[in-house]
Length: 386
Image (cartoon, rainbow, N blue to C red; front, top):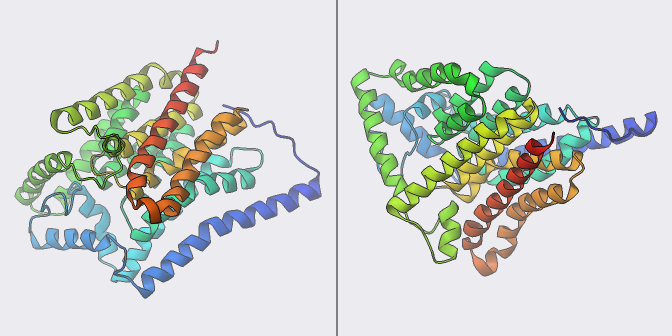
């Protein structure tokens, strides 16, 4: 495990600095949460996707079909079980708690990770400055990507701490929230082969969960319908998504059909091979951090319906990798990763008057690719050391 060697200042200065960093950390977490909560309370139907989630639970309760094509519900039937407790609450309270779960899960995961550093208050504040601004859109809209990103981040924390069952259950939760969580589970198996039987039990239990919440024939029909729905989603070619095809569309060379499917499958296989051959030989903390980068990177780059707000799943990896690179005395890489995260948070807003929303569709996947290149180079360099 990498040790932090930064010297401490004198005692009084240390306490004063820690207090300042603590106040900054609190502001970074609490202020956006309060602002968004006020927006939700005052205008609950504006800029929100939660009505789609509520409708899915209501359809399930009525025994109706969940799927109406890519414009509707695109998650596994397991999502209904995840969101049902929030649906049963008064609408505004349920929507607030859904958002709070994702946002506070992200903040808690960053805090758990950075508390290992010599100055944890400072480390958390700097990580939050890098990662949390990229999460604001998902927080405002109540998108499932927020809880998904939190689940992956907390799974990485548990992996670093040696808590295997907790990590597996969190990865299974990510799969229950969004189908691409299954890709994260596959990469987890590649990086941690010893977890195969835990993953098998966890994923089987996750897929069986809906059968506890509805008639067997109905649940089976919804799994079949979801498979057809996912095939429709994979064929979407609209120029409004920020996956790797968003970047290729900007270069007037988009992929479609079998070519797009081949690229997604090939990228997943390449990442799995890398995790198996390189990442699994590293110390626990570094291995967990590598898995998080590849899992989140795959989710945003190779989901054909990945939006700019989907990059909340990548934000924790960007934040923690920037910290790791700075602490490891690799400031060039640290600034590159932090700059990538900052540009994703700021440039789309600044350039929207001239470029509209199209800039983010190409810039986000480009920055994600740059980040994964940095991760790959660092991991290869580290693995090559005697």
